[in-house]
Image (cartoon, rainbow, N blue to C red):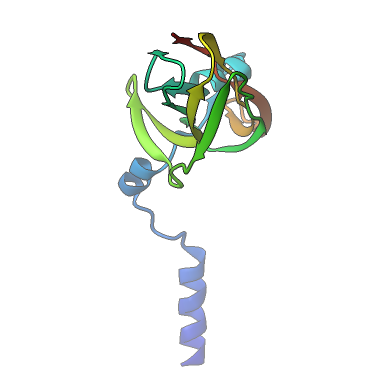
Amino acid sequence: LILICLITCVLFAQQPPAQLPSLLEENSLAVPILHGDENPDALIRKNVFVKITSDKSAVFTGEPFLVTYKLFTAYDVDPRVKKQPSFTGCSVVELSAENEPAEVMLEGKKFHVYTIRKIQVTPLEEGILQLGQVYVDNIIQLLHDDGRGIENFSITLHNDPLNITVK
C-alpha cells in the first residue's frame, strides 16, 4: 500500500498542474516580446505611459477643479513614483485615489490603469496655470524572441504638461 501511494505521488508530481488558458488570458497582461532589432524603449513607450486629465480646461480664479495623474500599462511593470509635480499659484487638496487598477481598452489593447495622484486644484491668480509632470520609474521584463531569454529594462516615464486657462 505504501509502495502504491509512493508511485501515485511520483506520477502526479511529474505532471504539470492543469491550466485554463482562456481564464488566464482574460485576467493577465500581455507578454512583452522583443522582436529582432526592435527598439525596447519605443516598444515600452507604446505600451506604458502616464497621462494627466482635468475635468475643466478653463476656470475662474478661486474655482476648484479635479486633476488626476494615471499610469497606463499593457505590461506587467514595477513602477515607482520618482518625482511629483509642484503647483505654484494655487492651493491643492489631496483626494483619495482608487486602490485597485481599472482595465480599459485602447486601440484594441487592454491596459491596466493605476491612479498615481488625484487632487483638487484651486487657482489663486489669473493666467495660464501649467499642471506639471509626474515622473515614474518602471522596471519591465522583455522576452527576446531569439532565445536570449528575459532582460530587465528600466525606463522613466512622465506625462505631457497640461495648461489650464484661469480667468
